[in-house]
Picture 1 (cartoon, each protein chain N blue to C red):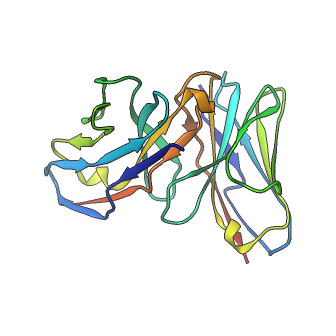
Picture 2 (picture 1 turned 135 degrees about the horizontal axis):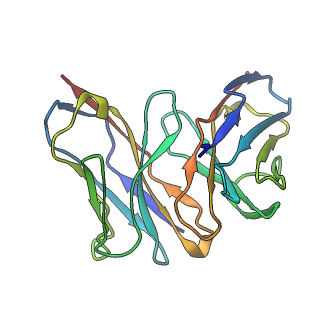
Length: 112
Length: 113
């Protein structure tokens, strides 16, 4: 059974740029959720994708957007990067309607 | 809205000591409760869960009991090891909210030999 994978591991961007982060869900899982974890804090829910559509969103602005593909993998896109976007971005996969979520190792984004 | 409050760290213990990390929650529905662990430089690992009142979750010597009357889900381990040094997160998910996870702020635990 393949776990959740994320790419890239780290990246550095400049304020105002755009970034795309990628996530492959655990084998068989059809739902992907994205979380932002600022340094020293707990993860914050960004949004969830199921059947290639957004299925719930946290308190994040529209410049945070996502996609889910037919193979259940997902992308997180962030436009017009701000310094406060610097964080660890975590992807989690699950079965729709089941509470347990399984996390990938995260992508560390630094905005300078 | 839903929220989770857990004790602030760091918690520093000697090996074989007893560990307790307090966690309380606020939720409008009937949430499932979780403890996740994060080792340095890694993502979150599901440690244990409980889905209804009085359920006890357990794994790797850790235990937590879902207490609806006190809205709590305290994590305990009887004898910690150096390898238990990590950050521990209490979280809840609410089916009515699409099972999104709401996390506490995390508690760093440092176990010294």
